[in-house]
Image (cartoon, rainbow, N blue to C red; front, side, top):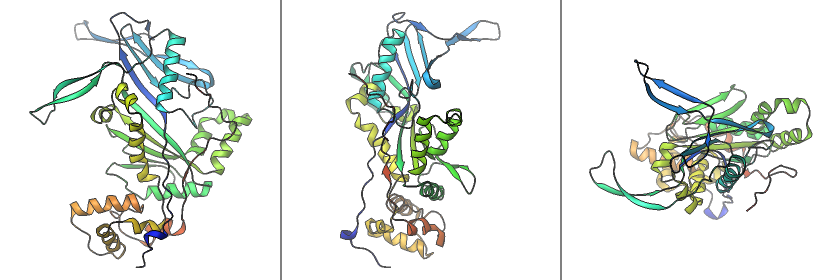
Length: 366
């Protein structure tokens, strides 16, 4: 097997710079210190008819272009859930960074609802004892807002609708993590590839943004509104795929990202988390990348292509992860000539999608 020299490689790293597509955030204030906002209460009764507890329902705040946010304030705790960046805008094809999302949200709370903004608060350390440990540990916590869900996303241009479709088929053949893979669409037209959809920690999804946009904006496209037609053409012609990463409460807590103060102190940490996840599925597929494998992983790759016996489990999983991350093939699946068809046919260049001219994304003040 001929190997290219390291000097011959011309692989350009993909630049990951996600924007925020959803937040669920809350903050406690003094008792009866903030305005009450809800849409009624749900009361839970015991068998004797006594109130066990009650919860106040979120009020759905509607903006222009059929956008919504869920807001609730019980006089002490303020909570918001939704896609803040898209609120009052035409679409969510592009959006704001996490920091700008919080800035926009705080403007809405103060100006539209007369509620206090979400803040980082003060940090301090407290002692905790984890479930499987008898030792006490110091945990850094913050007095301000906490997050229970963050969705990060980025668009990538494949160059044509055909390449976008083919890349989704390629992803559908992989098992990039131990998370369960689910595929939406027919065998001929794959629209979405999900990773870890039922995970309590985090999940990812790659999908054809043009198809999703066309379904979401059916009425506007039927009316042939120029803005939406031009945007659909842009998504289709450039073969735009989107990768979304959903970070749930358990993951945010265990990774130290639950507190707004922690994120605002190191905002690039979210970019790092997104990059580590996205780089597994949004990546160069050139066969020349085989040359970047360590020699032990390269030997495992070579054995796989020849149907030879593979290493023991621990070594195999380590090599599998490196091969998948570097080459983009999954040696956990049996080798067939079709296994490498996609990589053989394409020296694929995946680029971050660029915001087209005329796109509506107002600049935030302050």
